[in-house]
Image 1 (cartoon, rainbow, N blue to C red):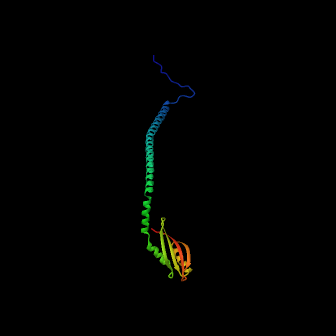
Image 2: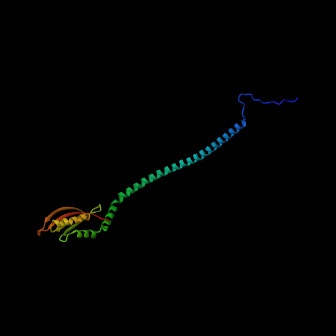
Image 3: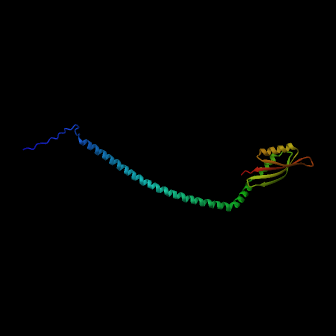
Length: 187
């Protein structure tokens, strides 16, 4: 006898669907998940090693900064020590240079051009100061107060700082004035 072929009838309310499509969909999703996981792990490992390199580089830079800070501190101490040690010598050399560079002819020319024709300088006592100024004490002889004021106004226009120390009248009736001037030296 012949074996009867069995028929697989599904009499359920919701019959089974074709499972091949779902297996294919599940396989594609699993492959995609595996591929994404692989790429994520590879990226994570690569950037983790780069982050480690960056951390090592930052540590090296921090050490270099500390060394540079120590060297800067030592250098500043050496500079301050040299400044303390050589300050007097440098000040002496600077004062010599300022004295050599100062234009006396320009100063005397300015004084001469400021004097009215009837006035003259009786005495001149210059003093060089450390703050690049020249202090002058003058005794000026003029015919009257107007001539003296003319002289002082011209000096003031030439950037002199003026202070009148005193005045007296000579035997001939001329006005003798003691004037203190401060002149900024130009280098």
